[in-house]
Image (cartoon, rainbow, N blue to C red; front, side, top):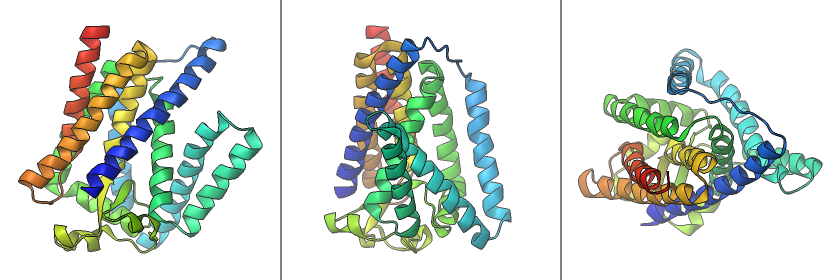
Length: 283
């Protein structure tokens, strides 16, 4: 049950922080009378699959030794940005920048499970708060459903697992590492290999892995609903996203016996349920 509890806690805290940042962002936008453009579903889908194709080509064509440098640099910058956004709302700019850079460098030089998960969560929270302002709720919901279909196909065809294994070999895993014991949160991630983890039997694995998108897309929808409908509707969506995440673990345990499965479809189903409830009840 540890991975279920840990992942649920990560999602709940991430949802709360997303709403906090989105609320501060909304005040800033309204105070400065900033008019934000709305991205269409076509643009959002094209952007997502463009990134997927480019990453696949890079993993296939570029040597791992070079990719380690590229992805390590990308993730360090992403983690620094993800921490700077919430810090910048509460502390002076120099302090926020200094803390964010320090945390990013620590991850680069000595990554641990807790630090990786914290910085991954903050990066997704910041991205959701920013892009949630640009995507209308229906667009965000449909985007999640489209990517859920891709998630199923990519897992069944082996593409998702190949990409995740290849990225873990570069030392930059776009996912959460969930230990089965509390002591596992302090272990180092240097040398962590998803390939080696997949070769073990489910009961022998010390950790489980949850894709970053399985947390990121519910955060994006929650932020989008908040900007359009307010706090009450976003809380309904956030609550059902947690139920969807728990449902994903139940399906994996009950039917797949610990084998890899796409978690986003049941999460998206939970989000869709909450979204429709708030849409028809609150408008």
